[in-house]
Length: 161
Image 1 (cartoon, rainbow, N blue to C red):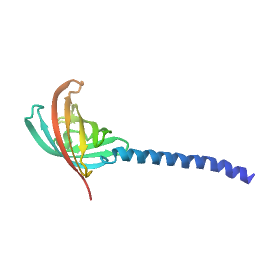
Image 2: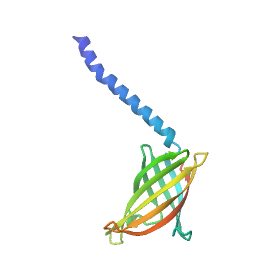
Image 3: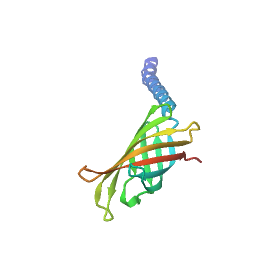
Image 4: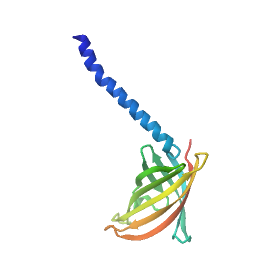
């Protein structure tokens, strides 16, 4: 009786251990593709009119998390006028990655004014501690109508202790 009880208790435990091993293997595999980009980056963003005329430049912090999520915060717009950017990223080829994130915007009376979607690509250099890329910045009103499209050049270094 005790042996049967122990076997019945061990079966789910063995299954759980196998699942943990599969998840760990998957996560390790993900790290080989996306591990070079994963982490927090200090970025310098140069916003332009897509014809090369610089509008302004500002710093940004971007976190590329395991599993493909992005969190972004920048000094280009006061934080009271926007939410943090949230989105996704993926490995494309070699040291190249695609990303997209969105933030909501507000006016000085805290009224919702629309959103901005940034979509781009970045390449991590051979050291794994620097990246460069470009992005398209699409600004929408509250009804989802595109107001303006801008371009951005990005350059970053890995944020480290």
